[in-house]
Length: 431
Ligand code: ADP
Image (cartoon, rainbow, N blue to C red; front, side, top):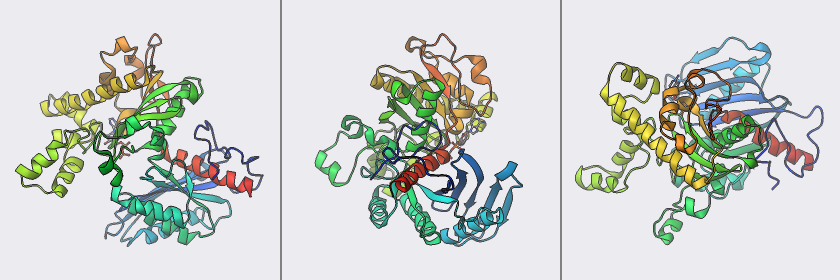
């Protein structure tokens, strides 16, 4: 299969070897769908310029209190529209989305729609690139359900629903794991019995790959360099959080593993923990595997440590002298600093440390504390630059610092749209 360039820097680009860009009049719109177990987030983009035409979400699918929020953005945008009332399933949700888009003159039946791009969480080792979805691809995503039981079934439902609405249109899967498939074996393997690991496909896959790919490339752009020329540590700090070491545009290590539980301290997840904690609790605390799963995924991390998982609230409590909130913050930052140090060693030379996602983009105190004391490694933030608020990618380290500290807003939807469009316009060029 022809693959899109993973290192395209701006705008849509056809797949290598695909010939010229699609001709004038070829469809250029991409619908990006991110289907969760009870929600669908969507954006419609036009790859002529990467601009957004509409975005929205449907949440609480299957409940009485479902809600659709639609924001038209075409021609300067319009009023946000909200609809409340039961939406039974993903098929009904997508139909409701299609109606909202049609009301803005952007219906799914439009000949200007080139492709639907789907976020798929787990692509295992097989999917190293965005992939046009057919029956074999659907079957493989299904086969990966045991390693992504929460996410892949929801992603599949979204894909099947979209396929039934526009069976004639190419649908592309963009995998959260794909960017990490370049990790060398010594980073990807756990040090456990090889036969057991292979029999159960246990290895480190990594997640948030679309964001790590986008942010590492944008960081290179910010430095005025090609992705191949720079080594970047990317810190994606949202509710889920992960770090990656990116050498010359390729991921060489990342903090999430078999599942998104490993690594950094997160909003509700523990991150790294001695695995013996699991069987200790099962043997001594009358907890089942399911109970421990819920503890580590839902009742740990910042929320487990101090009762709050929103960094804004934690900072507010610290300002009021709350010791539990302060300790939670310190544990969060300590783990972050350990990963910066580890990935510095993995990369050998680091050009930039890039902060992204809700916490990374907004929480100046986290950025400051994470690099505090690392001057010997060439890392520092400029207090004034770090405190400035902006939606733009920017450098917040002082000029003298050897390593740039960057704040780079992530844009997973744009990245999914670019990759999906690049793939199908490449295919169209070959036809
Ligand atoms: P996800 O996509 O993983 O749900 P986001 O990337 O949207 O998460 O990040 C959400 C988190 O970002 C919130 O839980 C909160 O901790 C943090 N956050 C958002 N805005 C701010 C802010 N202004 N200051 C500090 N933290 C913020």
